[in-house]
Length: 103
Figure 1 (cartoon, rainbow, N blue to C red):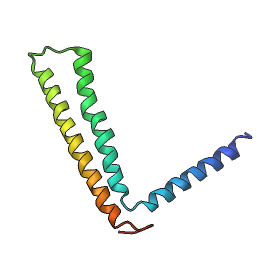
Figure 2: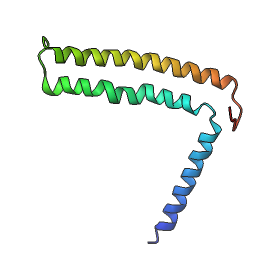
Figure 3: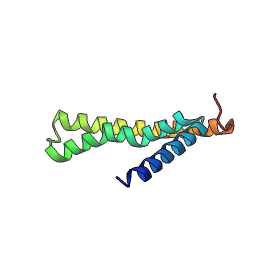
């Protein structure tokens, strides 16, 4: 029970700091796009296909193997394109950056 107050206090300070930091970034959606390109796409589309091919070892002459490989390869191309596009958008938005901006 004696740890409740320090935990609530530290959690509140942490959430307040994260909220302040997010409010300071008018290009927050661009940063989320960057995270999406480098984290969410590989976790959702590339790794399951690779893990399926490694775990179940489908025949290399079979359609399943090549569909999985095609999905993984196509998603890898999307990761590169999405990463470049989101970095470009961050650079463009950083030129017009103003603290706590609404636009």
